[in-house]
Amino acid sequence: MRQKPSVTVLETGMSTSRTAFTQNASGGRILASPLAKRIAEQAGLDLRGLKGSGPRGRIVKADLERARPTETTMPQPVVAPLATRSPPKDVTKPAPLEAPGGAYREVPISSVRKIIAKRLTESKQTIPHIYLTIDCELDPLLKLRRAINERDGATFKISVNDFVVRATALAIAKKPEVNASWGGDKILRYLDIDISVAVAIDDGLITPIVRTADRKSVAAISDEMKELAARARSNRLKPEEFQGGGFSISNLGMYGVREFAAVINPPQACILAIGAGEQRAIVKSGALTVGTVMTCTLSIDHRVVDGALGAQFLAEFKRQIEDPIGLLL
Image 1 (tube, rainbow, N blue to C red):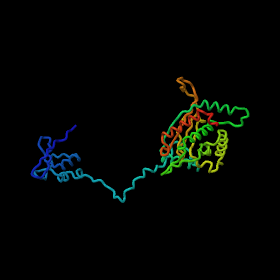
Image 2: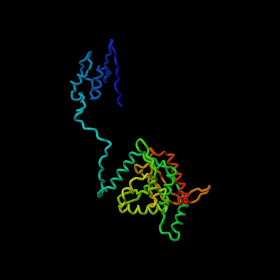
Image 3: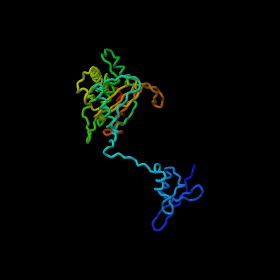
Image 4: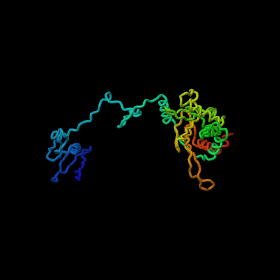
C-alpha cells in the first residue's frame, strides 16, 4: 500500500499561512498549497514537473487548472430548483399489489367481504390488542352433555358451544367491566349481556347476537343459536340481529383448531377464541392422567380492559366450564 506523502505546515508572521511541502521521488521538496495538493490527489495528478506561480514558486490551484483543466476542475452537483422537484412519496399509502407470476383468476369482492376487510383492518390498526390464554378441562361438561342428548325423549342436541355461550354470559355477570367499549374520552359499559357469536357464511363471517344471554338456559341458547345460524347462512338476518352486542365468541374447535387468537370485533373490547377439545396429559392430585382439554384465548382492548381484569374473567369462565352443573341452574 502506497503511503501518503508527508506534509509539513509552516506558520509565519502574526497570521497563519499554510504551505504543503510534498516530497518528490528524488528526495527534493515540491512547494504546493494545501488546496493544490488536495486537488492533485483527487484528480490523480503528479506535481513533479509543474512550475508554480505562487510565492517562492509554490504550486497553486491555477497552475493545476492550466496544466490539466479537464481533470482538475471538479464538477458541481446539479440541484433542481425547489419548484421543479418531485414531491416526496407518501410512504403510508400502500403500493398496488402485483399479480403473481403463475396463472390466476380474479374473484370479485362482495360487499360483505369489503365490510369485513375494513372493520378488521381498522381493528388491528387502532386497537391495542393483548392476548390471554387458559386451558379448561372438558370431561365433566362432555359427560353432562352426553347425558342430556341421550336421554329418553330428547328432541334436540346441545353443543359444546351452547355451554360456552352460557358460561361466557355468567362469567361476564361476575366481571361486568369486560362488557364494554372504548368511547374516546370515556368507557361505555353495557348493562345487558348481549353476546355476538361468529358464524361462517359463504362470504366470510357474521356475528348474530344472543341477547341477554345470562337470563337464558342452555337449552334456550341452543334453540336460538340454531335459528340464528340457519338464517345467517341464508342471508335472512335482520340488522338488529347481528349489529351491536358487547362481547364476541369465535369457535373453531369443530374444525380441529387447537388454539388461535381472534381479532377484536369493534367497537367491542373483547373476543373469546375457543379451540378444540382434545385429549392431553394432565396432572391431577400429583398424578399424571389423560383428560380432555380446551384452550381458550381472550383478545382484549387494553384501553378498556387491563390484563388483570382479563385474567379474572378467564378464571371465572374456566370455573363455569369445569363445573357444568351450575350452567343448568
